[in-house]
Image (cartoon, rainbow, N blue to C red; front, side, top):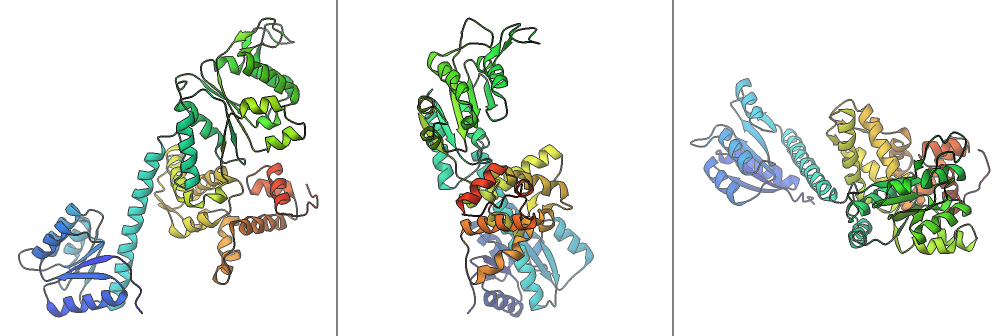
Length: 458
């Protein structure tokens, strides 16, 4: 039984036997075929019907193959054209290719040759249209900062952003490391009435308590040794704008008390100061932790939790939005080309499929790093399997061979991948976490979720 390809081919050939033979070959291969015996009829059809491919004889009365080629490119610029003729010369071949023909075949041709060139021409058209579609989707996505994705869960996130951005309510963003929490925060700021003022991001897990107070609240002159002049804190710098507190769950309890006072009183007391300074900011906080559990365990203040958790946005891991990977990969490809002054135009089909299937424990940040690496290593106009990290390219051999008999779940793939990396690292979690582009805490949480033994190699 012939498998249908759903692609429509127009054959233009004035010799009856040659036309019927060509039509027979392509119909038997599985294509829908319309054939005409002259160029004028072909051009009439091109005005009224879309074709994926045109195969035309070169030498015909009145309207020849080059005219059909020219009209095809004017009316249907993404339709590929193959020229077939018994009058093969270097000059006409060069002219046809220069005018946009995909290929030039001389009679007598072999059946296998026609089938192969037809397949390649149609593949080129599909990839070109997919690339255009991805770029158009990316343009639409740029309306909200750099958030990229058309999966239902991300469309819901974008809908929520639009709904809450105009208000001044505080927002809590939940999600694993690398899922794009800061991008969501920036999008909320950009769509709010505060967009003309500062957006200040601060990572609560990167500072000691003393440095945290100094950075957030500022200090007065002579507040401590070396404080030769007063300094405004980040909250004051963001006056009228937005303060994004990343990894809020890592903030010490004593600092939580001070932050709560700022939110309630709308004023900041600089370190070493005696007079509070009024501030008008919107707070957006983010964490990978379960803050409700931290509240229950006494590690996070309940009153602060409810002050921050007016609206919650939950970001999915990349494992749960694999359909967005082509969009994200193309987005990062364009980004890295611009930053690195390169011109890698595409991602090979096999490489893209592997990116879609990989479990991405490091989420979007890991995907961005992989694309950046691939662009740097690419030797041609597209990213190939050789440009991907070994731990991803090896999956085509080590993981997906079992697909013929059993389709693994995404959870299975992630668990098996973590086991595989740990085995390659001889149980060294620090090294394994580095390879997976996640921190050791994230690796520990994943191992705990999958019930994997922590046989404690650092």
